[in-house]
Length: 247
Image (cartoon, rainbow, N blue to C red; front, side):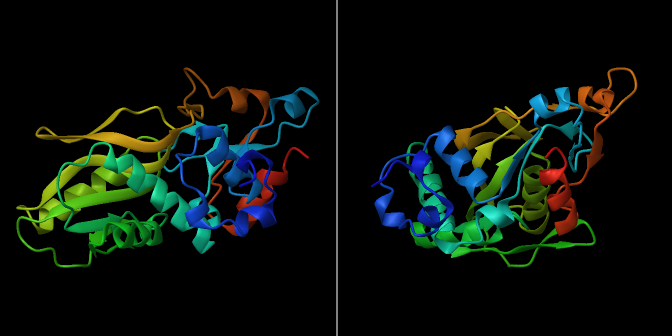
């Protein structure tokens, strides 16, 4: 197989999941995302030439110099299956029990969770976003073990909300103590869900992306440069804007 770091977009979209036998590293995952148009990073060199452009406003309210879009990364079934296989490889290193249900945290990881469940040969439980809340749709059986799958982890907010929603509907559920993600971009080690539950962030790869609080005491350095924050995923036009703002 050709070196993934040398593959073009067409070659990546033709890559068969069964041909990727080993673990991917961070450079390979980022190359795949970047080549497929699913990754943006602030161009500091362009800013020195006066092209300050736009930067990312995260759902947490923090500002960032990098952003991944899982909808773009995972829209091709072969890439989605490759990432699902990578997650299962990672899980095999730590998982000591059977999994009854897999939940892909919406919206970014819904289909990814289905792919992971298929590989594990287990059931899928579905969650949906309703009025800004995560809502469990599937009725989970008592005493079931539940594995959560997420696309990217920054601060674990979505994971925390998803776990609490499941436990509110089925308190006897046994939550496997892992936030299983493709990429850990926030550098978190654990997500504290409650006083009695702390889950380890279990990424395929780590790729630290900088982010800053949006305040006047210690302002975002990109705002200081004159760059404007924008929500990258709010609309397709926003994504086009942020990825072309420094060209």
